[in-house]
Each structure stands twice: as C-alpha cells, then as structure tokens.
Length: 199
Image (cartoon, rainbow, N blue to C red; front, side):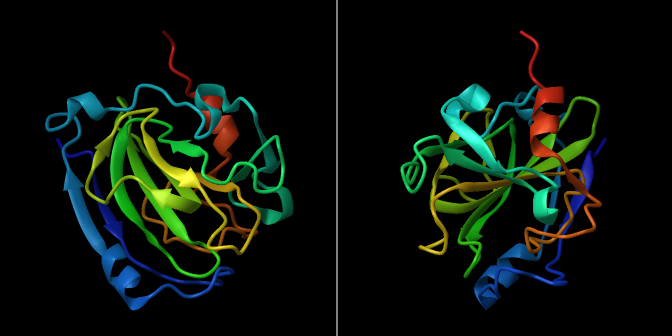
C-alpha cells in the first residue's frame, strides 16, 4: 500500500525571502513515490528529537517561536548569542526522506526538506533553512539524529540561526516564513514534545 504521492510544485504567494533561481524552481517541481512500509521499513519515524543540541536543544533557545509575529516556524539560536552558533551542527529530527536540499537564494539561503513517514501512515515534513552547509542531497534517506547540515546566516543576511518548521501538509511550497494563515503548519516545539521516542 502506498503511503502517499508527494507532489512538489512551486506556487508562490507573498514571499518575503526573494526569488529563487530557475535551476532551483525546476529541481523543486518533482514527483516522488515511495512505499515506506515495504521498501524502507527501517526509515519509518518512531520518534522525534530537536534539530539542534540533540536530543533536547541543550545550549540553544527559541528566539522567535511559532506564531510570534506570524512566524511559521521556530528560530533556534545558540545561547552564546550573535554568530557564536555559526557552523554548529543541524540534525534530522526523525527518520525520513530528503526531498529537497538546495540554495534557495536571497533571504532563505540553503534549505533542507525532509518527509517523515509515521507507523500510522501519516506524513510530516521538517524544514531547515539558512544553513551554512548541507550534508545531504535530495533522494537520500536519513536516520533521526543524523547530521544534515550546519547553522548559517543565509549568506550574511542575518545573524546565524536555524529557521525550523514542521508541516502537516508535505505539498506546501517553500513559502515566505511568515503568514497569518498557518494552515498546514504545526508548532515545531509542540510537535516534537508530543512525539518523543519512548525507550
């Protein structure tokens, strides 16, 4: 039985972070079909950790939580402030499939998007932006806690931090990071706390 057809189309509304390159647009318009139960059973997500300071975000704080100023994610910063967390590791929050990993241009910088398949057949996406480096490529499968990149500043646009989202709708475009309408987006911290792995 197929878990889901993932259709990725770039449909811009009001985007706050600039225009991506033509190459990035073409690479995002993709169709992926995977049977996660039968083809990749070892990558079914059985729990989630935080994307920094694994597993519990130790030495990091959420500088701009979901919903604050219409923010669609969490902004994770090192407790040292400024750019002290530049180059720090970013981890996959759970087992999943890397559907996108590319430089999205001004404002966003490097983005990694991972789809997570749960035992109950639900799917979620984790979204990691402003990365300094990316250590995974689209089409790879990753395990929870795998290092997928490092914290960046979107090519000098901001002080270093990780913009992190969790999406219940895995077909959403990259978007703009802020919106009044939060349909398809989840509070990332609340999601992780509700889905911690029980040892």
